[in-house]
Image 1 (cartoon, rainbow, N blue to C red):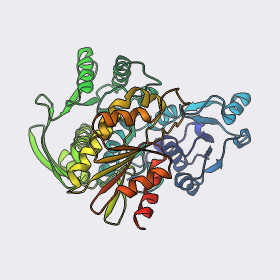
Image 2: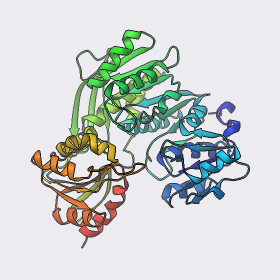
Image 3: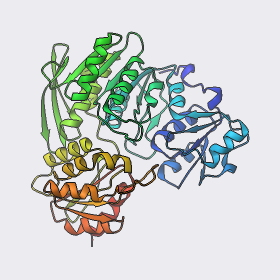
Length: 469
């Protein structure tokens, strides 16, 4: 497959970019693609990581720590995400020297311009669905470019500059950055209130997704779930405007593409759908209805891009998961330890229900780390209710990420809600006490989930070590 020269060129402003926070999931993917296209990529991050090491392997220069001196004299731009604070010294240096500042969404949009973009949006499931498409299209020899919010199977595999014409991208709604993209086909998996620091109401969320829908290229298609209340409301609003073709999928009787059956086989799923009058069954090596539904969204979107549905259905069977999405970290003492990125109550519920189907007679034990003070403030009750689906849980202190503490908002809000829902839950507080508590609960046949979007993912090996004693 010959490369299209337009897909190997780099915009002038991104020829020598400096990424602040280059090790982040979204930032590192864009940096990787630019490096593969020949840009001289540099950047900084707070600490060493496998992602930073992978970027260095591509020739990127990465500084550890943030300092004005990190910004090269000939930098053509500084790339930032919404997580970068205004007082960052490298951002201040860029302003003082007149170096253009580019948001990561603008950089990604520029990379997609010459391709056929397929954008995956929704409050939950974006990374999984984007990954399914990247793997399936790749297995068919289409060599798509992709930018994903997580690694497929190894550090640095969250992005690729392909030779094919399709570019699959995760479209982030958290800061409205998905308004920058102009996809040929777009997926909306679900619409719920989240990212409370940026959205004051569900109405603002609907308006944001409507704007995204309006960005679909003329002649393109918007793929929307028929099974989620918020997604159905978005479909109603978009169809009322009649400016973009909408195709729905799901188990609902009125879905354009019907899911006829989802059968769990341990930690895998077999799905039967009715697509364009043809019934087809395919397997996906991930557990639960939530993930099977994501696979159907990928199937419909790919077929709208012109990929034969029967071939794509088989290709989706080559997908075996993504790092941090129900990823098996290991087994010790006949206890499996699995890592889950779930941090919103809907995601937590979906993952716990999926795991329950494959856990056999063993108990499900959760080490949960709440992510963001604002999310905890708004959704503590729902998080606690989700944890009641586990047999027992340990809740760590809140992972702040980019936020400052909010008075009165602590993990105790979730613990109280969980206990009110009948859950067996303890406060683990630290990254030392939490693993010790959860490992002490576990017995042969049990399954331990480390759950959350913060650094709880690093505690799996520590739990496995404790279980081996």
